[in-house]
Length: 300
Image (tube, rainbow, N blue to C red):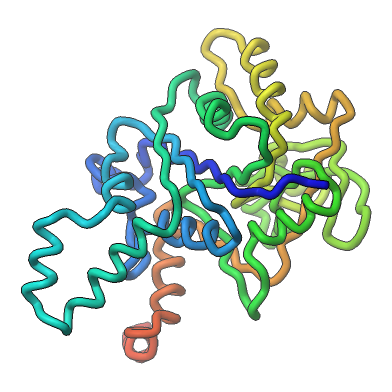
């Protein structure tokens, strides 16, 4: 019987250089999508999927993230209460943010690369399966479908192995941005991975199944990220794919799960962030209708 997945790891230690100077003093994960930071959308999806503990791997300038998920400061509480009953619901919203999960923060230490956060959280995750997801991208459920994390968990419960969230590539540019899985399809949308190729380009891609936005790892990933670290040469970067390739070479099973009825949202580049802001703004319950009306009148 598979263990229940209750922990998630979110690396947020990057410097967000694509968004400088905005990110000089504010993490890119705190960039707003209308009235919520990107990282809150991800946290809400995790909690809605049954995650109880969210471990964030941070750097020195991520204090804003910690503050966001903390209880509101006394001065802010007083200011809200001075606004009377009309503003009181705002306090409830802020308290709900801090109460939604057990938030744990650990500083990133080690070589550059997205595999290093795995080294930093092993003592917190322990011998449990866990979600590993990014702080600047997510897959938004559509048509009432389960979230990416619920779909990963369901696949894990059936097969008992690590599962990579995936979507079908749609543009030539996608093949230059993501890693792609190659293997045998055990059923529609579930691939038994034999190889992973990073940013291959369309001509060299082994499939159209791009791995992105979230993964479910079994604890054996820690053994293999440790092996990958030992294999590093001076100046090289440590990537989680290094560990996955070692797992595959040892015959460990890793699946790719196509996420059904989800829209990929990317807030990691300027143009994709702006697209996401506009699309989320058009759906916002308070301003969506007015915003769409303004867009139609403003587009040249």
